[in-house]
Image (tube, rainbow, N blue to C red; front, top):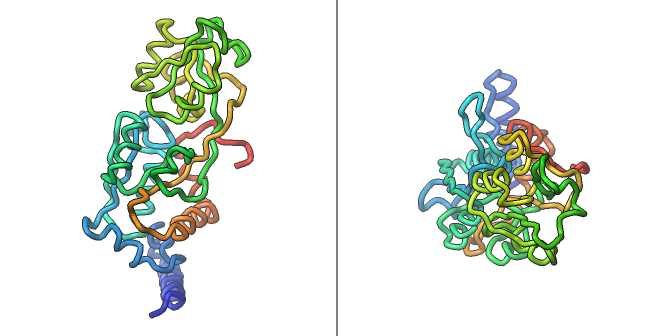
Length: 274
């Protein structure tokens, strides 16, 4: 059966199933529009699983829903749906911070990531088209001296960033007078803001709003520092057809499932043009 026949066959299979009220899963429905499924899945078939690299504390990656104790997150669900399409076992591997995920990707000990497609990371990863754009900004104490971005770049002001994040490199070039302080986790950054060791913390607003929820005297500044283009990434050492990955992204957008995933994750700070 050629690729076109395979697509038609699977589409008809889904239509029949739906008419019979079988309620076929999203993974099955998505797989109907992709050619070359077997060839793509072969690159993972040695293990028969898809290892998704994630880091805790970000709705773009993975967080725990406090009401249900279930794991949610855009990256977490994208990896799960991609594994369904490939008919592979889904193995989410959760690290403390994004830098750990990037290191694992460089070692090819994970198969897929969902992260900011920065030029530095593109040296190691091959990226899909952008899945979502998120505003970047600052978190500050609502009781502190910094209440606007214009007040930040001054001598003695301490701005935190996560070690290995894209914000780390960007802020060291952007801020000429303020001191950039590297932190190991968002939890430690919140504590440093609370105790006055930091005057601000910078990353994408999806993470900033999650941090703000954990401390009543914090606030996310309204100004937009820039944008992060978050995309699916695979190690360059893996030979894959990125058109296949892009088709997966397009289908999630077309059928509205991406919007549902973003809503379930509670992701805020999404660019207004999305």
